[in-house]
Image (cartoon, one colour):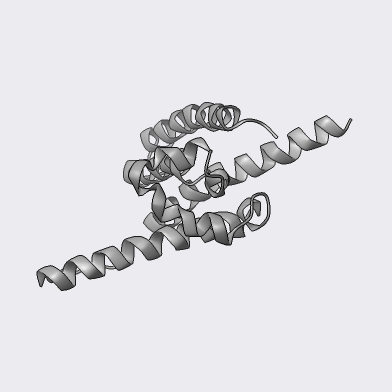
Length: 155
């Protein structure tokens, strides 16, 4: 398998191309700049922090979480490396759901403890789609790179 640094390099090269495409599509008004920004931000976040290698305690993505990496220890125990964590559809879904659950619980606790009341407007589907696509794509690139690397090594 490619090293974590090789995976990140591949994802960042693709990010540069995606930025160019996003700028062009925004310029010709085929895509809202805000949606392109959500997609690109989610892509960058996912590349750095939601890698399929999060289940490895010695991986760069795990270390990037700093002190908050302790939150990913249960995830690493639940999902064995290159099993469900590397599934092209379910892998990112497990990490997104896991992180979403942690963030939701933290928000609920903060709102309860402070007595604050917050109104959340319903997000528009294009924003959700841009966010999910941005979170998914680097994970799919990672999994495809692993498969291609393995196939080439078998030759």
